[in-house]
Amino acid sequence: MNPSSLKSRFTTRFLRALTKINAHKPISSSSPGPGEIFQRYRRIKVAADKSMAYSVRSRRTWSRATLWRLRTRSPRSRLATHARRSWVKTRSTRAASHGKEKKEDGGTVEAEELRELVPGGEAMDLCNLLDETAHYIKCLTTQLDILDRQECTSREL
Image (cartoon, rainbow, N blue to C red; front, side, top):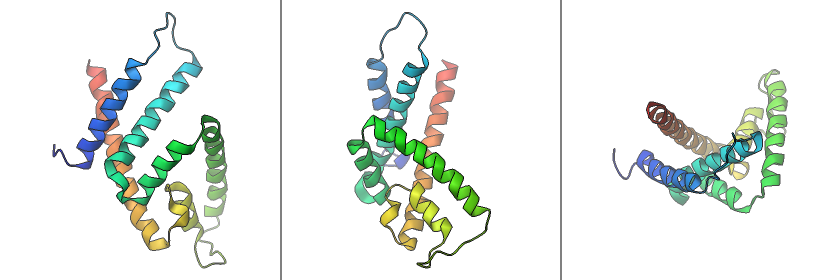
């Protein structure tokens, strides 16, 4: 693997973060409860998001927006964001069932949905939004590939 590739940069950062998470793991005599499992899940997800954003560096709007969101949000506001996104998905599914609807400003509902999904997309014009979306999808695909390989490796051990 090329040491300067996105995959290798992400893998290095993510494995370092997982090592820190495992080092701070509390030793409990009983099986972990749902709250402890959820906290661990959140730490791993934040580590994966942060590793991917740092791997891309500040060249992309979505990576800067992700890092800013991770630095400035409290755990309670993250839960509120998750609830809001669930509502947005429900609303956008209803809007998608009506076909392509034009908005008053000339944009489409689909572009607005992309703006909500891509970090930092709210302030982008359509051309930049599509470019950032393509790069964001590429990075998410890379992240999934690495996580899948990590899971396969841990199963073999």
